[in-house]
Length: 431
Ligand code: 4AD
Ligand code: MG
Image 1 (cartoon, helix red, strand yellow):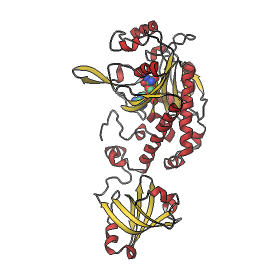
Image 2: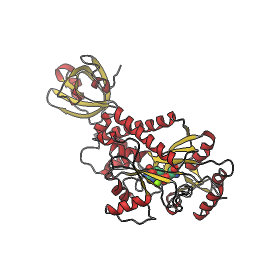
Image 3: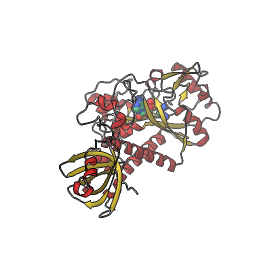
Image 4: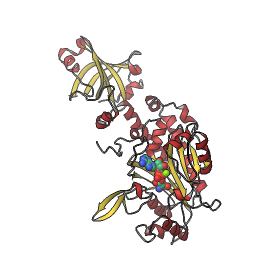
């Protein structure tokens, strides 16, 4: 019977015999004493191998491990303040499972090289912690929505619709017809909301982003709630409640991961609804005051969002953008013509946009007019979407959250690529 290293680290096995298996994290030795730090998915522990205890043959084999060799080790658990983690396994038996070859990753390697060996680098402490954290965050988001009466739905990945404009579409050949990889499941979530009330899609979205930035992926995971009868106001309330829930639960349950990633939990403990709000016009003014350069009618780029959110502790809502710079489906504000009932939610500390949402146009004539103005054919590939406004349309709202953007901010990562195992960017589709 093998035990998880984490169980030993919790102090549940003091003085007992234990068998563990995993990968060699580190190894150092001298004449008759050899230390292997072994890791498995749950932790790392120092194993002390004495020649007099295991015999010449086993000792010699254990001395020949490489970093990342896979091994099985048995011994007695002992408390030892000097050992990393405070516990040591005094080895009685050792078995090599696969010695392998010398591991290509050592200290001080370039980012590019680490991306080339991403399939091996994903075993690193930092990436293991980030992947665990991502898993938990996604679970908490789902947990919140499930508890609030949402149904999970699955949108298609191959579509004919251009949800977010033509410039970032990945085109493909669909049996001789043009089709695209989905930029967003929103339009399909709207369909489902008229049947199921409150729904969310969680699926990959694709953006042929032509630029190289620390927050753009060509393929990312998109959480997209869509709610029948919800107003713009209710939409924003849901966003702040959802984000607060996931962040608070994560801080409470996983201080170990935050520590591993050197992320200060104090920065997250303050993230509780309500979040501050700013109108688009005021946000532009604010950017200019803080040294940026923007005009009304321009959208915020990464630099402007960084300037705007640097001093904030909580995420910041920016709402009511000019309709010209926003997607065709966003409803115009009846009280502020020329502006739409939308919002971005910007992560603090300079991280920037992690959610985009809006109340949707639900009136048939309004939608047709706006589609035409945006160069879209209401009788073309999105006719079905227009149809929703012909048969029992109701007010509704929704939003999309990039899960990697959320993860990047919560974990304080420098680059979005470390929030997903196999990042797809303009320069990389390998491994
Ligand atoms: O603001 P976006 O483009 O909005 C939509 O796609 C809407 N249809 C969503 C909806 O209302 N259901 O994208 C939504 C979010 C952004 O706020 C960002 O978090 C993420 O998706 N996102 C990206 N994440 C990583 N890489 C990219 N290239 C991203 N583009 C958008
Ligand atoms: Mg957006």
